[in-house]
Length: 450
Image (cartoon, rainbow, N blue to C red; front, side, top):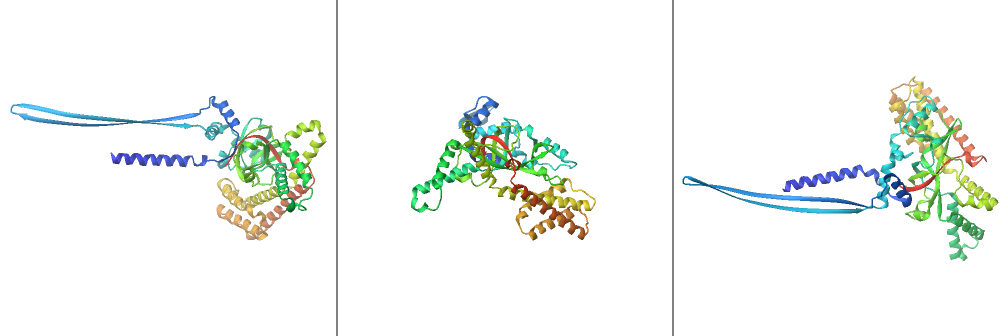
């Protein structure tokens, strides 16, 4: 029996490790979770929500021992036997109590096929055949990596990877509170360090009252951006857009909404100001994407009684958001640099009268993506990146291109890249309306996790 128990033990160990490997990608840690929303969505799908799970296991061991004896006496024959039987029954019962995290896990597994932008499709971004931008978007829409603005209807569930960040008004309110506390605790040290601290503290109290315990989130979406084609806004995966052979003007996409401060599971100071990448599950609150949004919801109510005050608060919010363009500018420069590398590879293929498609395009696009951080480096390092992509293109396609043509093409591509970067910087530095710079997807936040 010992050998049989050894087999059972090894089987259970292998099974548990197999399940652990299968579920590794589902491990998540919550930063924010709205229990009411999770239970409401789960109930709308399955009706009753289980609160306990019971696992029962019964084991029966039975042993039998028998013996038979036979003897011959004279002309007769005698037979005798004994039989001994024993049984043992063991039963175990495990009761598991459902918590909100397990309910969320079941909810996500139930609704995953209905979720827009789900991160489960990140590894499935296809390499599409290029014929026109319209055809590219149509194919991407079929694969679930591009959406018309009109398809983003109120109530649809979305799951996006974003850089977690709060709106500038909330950050300003937090900093005013910090400096106000320092001023009250150490007035002799803070005297003369901050001018107008009293006015700032008054403004901080106004913001605190208007926010009413809510945290306005303004999170840049990592994998998707917005474009405008023939007057129609689209939300497109960046890796789809990078397959276009020419530059398509795009806008940063922000997931915006308000979260309840009491529902955060971690200290806000640890998470809200670091812009760490996280996943957000939410429901679209306003259909389509928009060119503006209001981070302080009570402003609309205040505007009915004090329109001038509401207008000034809205203007302050927009002006403060405009004062923080650097992260978006760096992101845009890297995207332009990556596209230039892919364009350079395509042009090299055209010089050899061939095309860059399929697996070759996928491999070289991945190489270009790995070089995007060079966009902010010295000119020599940028040239080296172009050389690496050029050599990889020649080796991958097995082509031969004249060295002089390669040098001229590289210079022309880098000159075009420089013009594109300057044009993008000029468009961001002008005094145009802030609505032209980005698009907003207004959502009700259900959960934030990583």
